[in-house]
Image (tube, rainbow, N blue to C red):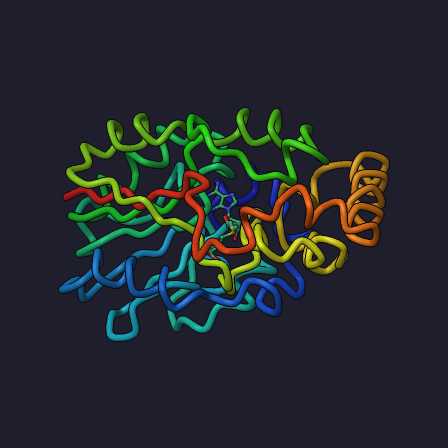
Length: 251
Ligand SMILES: C[S@@+](CC[C@H](N)C(=O)[O-])C[C@H]1O[C@@H](n2cnc3c(N)ncnc32)[C@H](O)[C@@H]1O
């Protein structure tokens, strides 16, 4: 086992079980990421988790510090390691991908430097803490998420700078988005009442139940009384919402 894995607090060893049931890869995000990785035959997926969003016809090396996540990954080549110390020689891969993982890395700049070192192209999907539009769940029920996410997500401009990126693409979340990360259910508020849905999002899973449960009870009451629907009538007609998710492409 790579020693970097031993140093990483593997949150996903605790919350990763059942991840694939809720975090179903979304075909529209898959298409966007696959286009960015077009032509790459060898790809290292860093923070690979269960292998979401990997292009079908590439040779994948899956890297993750969590054994629970690697156990759910189908690749033949799996390496238990953290992004900060990738156990590969310089230029080993056509491309490196990292999807919704940079915010888990203890040293994002070092990890991004490693993506540049081991691969000729980099494709990183992340969330921008500087984005002005906030999810109603955070504004009205769980402002604690704001502090937590602002502390752990690196601004997209910094990610782009660290990679020497040439392209940053917005990804507005479709109304029927299938991958249950935090903002996924912006138009389906009742989904947040399900503990399994909350467990598949690391922010929820890391907040204490004493914070989450009263907020969810308030949401339940607002849904029962119709208050949520009155307050958010404007959201119900929208096809997608830009909550600050971005695809950063370099190389
Ligand atoms: C939200 S999951 C994303 C998994 C996958 N990329 C996806 O899109 O479904 C975050 C992943 O980052 C991994 N991770 C945590 N710390 C890491 C580190 N230091 N280096 C690389 N990956 C890490 C976690 O174990 C987890 O599998």
